[in-house]
Length: 135
Image (tube, rainbow, N blue to C red; front, side):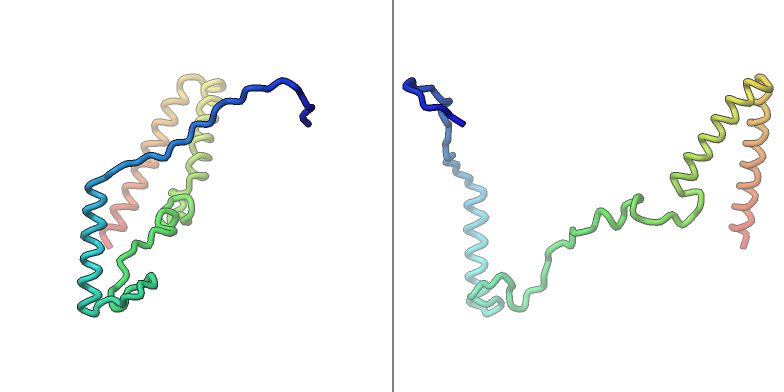
């Protein structure tokens, strides 16, 4: 709520300018587009009404709507159980907790146990991949 005053309070001056810009490339493109449209209208390929959709010309617009979400790894369901981000985070967490707890209870020997366990898992994965390639 503003109280009446006998003093004039200065307000910041508003700066509003409308730029005048000449773009020769844009002018040339518009000129060529209008010339080509006139030629196509004379040939009867497009209708002169210009209701937004040309007569017999196919639509060359891109279907960009939803193009980024279709290929998004967040939206699609993982086809393999090991592609799931939640499962990978759980495995990493279990390895870290197991390594930390094992180091406290067993000592540095737990690192060798994890090394042997990781090597065995890698050999099993390699064996199953070779078995699936052989089919």
